[in-house]
Image 1 (cartoon, rainbow, N blue to C red):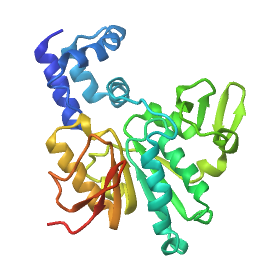
Image 2: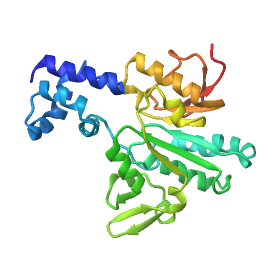
Image 3: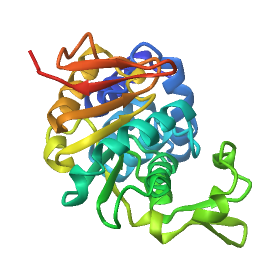
Length: 270
């Protein structure tokens, strides 16, 4: 494949969604090779085609995004939410909706996990919590909205005892998330670097964006951190992956350390 054509396509991907393949062209080449063969196009031709065909852009996003996830991922973080963060909102949110944004939610395991945790706490009345789950990949988002997962899926590899029977219905070879959990989660097809992301999400109390920023450079991390800060309500909380940080690009976040994890609280932006 033409290096210059790959660079052009990588630049388009970077400008559109922030994912940087400019330093890893061989990976981009391997991800699109079969699609190019299907269409009978060269990289040069495809670079132009994807810019004018919105459906093809969606297919490209499916090819280049990583969507590995599972229910009840990162136990220490979930315990912190359940035991220390959610209880903070119990009294204050009796007359107000607790809003949680789960960014880059993939096929839905994380936001559904959060909804199950909410139920397990027994702190909130029905309808008092809303989880906004967003992703740029329409295909995985469609799966998430259906709430159907194959019974042999690795999505269940960390499922705590009893939770499967409690919050899922077995339908043939699939487990379907119960309506009482699904009604808490609202899915949205969004690019987290959309210039209108703050308006589209609205204000939130807690944001989770885990193991996503590692795919972006400093410029896009700074942009994401600013969006997180602006979207969070006063004293709101931000949870990232264990290898991700925003302290160097946004001094408005205070870091909270626990024996097992660290996360961020919205402070005064300087």
